[in-house]
Image (cartoon, rainbow over all chains, first blue to last red):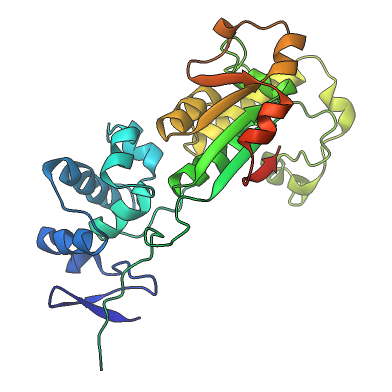
Length: 105
Length: 184
């Protein structure tokens, strides 16, 4: 498994660059991860990222899909697309340091 | 050793990013045939792909407010119908095709539909009306076929909100220019 350096920190990632060890994650790192993909974190960004991490932990380490972000998290799908353009579910999971969602819907 | 950070490629920098376009044609109104097109459309939207769905013939039931929550699944004509529960009676039975004649038994379509809806709900997959709404929330475009619309004597009010137009086959050709097409 490769490691990479983001903002001076060594982190373990998979081939694609997603964190493999959620314990290496903290909010300071999330800011840097977001910056790597062109996103500046605001309060509006934090709410879904925090929910995604909580839900991942609470739900047997399953990353919520976009649909679940909407139904369980109460987030507006259109807003998620605006905050994390084009591929919101994948981008959120990258920033949140959890695996990308595998559910179909 | 130079250490270039490993960052996932979300395709944002691709010159052709955003160019990919998908059109799904939904032509069937059975419960089991409504899902594939909707799920693929939803997956495409989640990948940032411009996505259109064209509803034609029986597929109209998916966007008709009066029918969309009442799609049915019939065993008739489906030789791939199995009952996972039968494995409890005798291992192997779950792979057996259900006899076609059973599908014609009164009440069987309703029972099979109920069973399928439960299996779908157990997997946390939305109902058809919810799927259609979700697709719209994700920015999907819905189109209705003019010919089927006229043939089935529908009104605009019958259709779910947000259908962008009732269009002809020629319009569809323009709409789908350069798109990948999935026909269901």
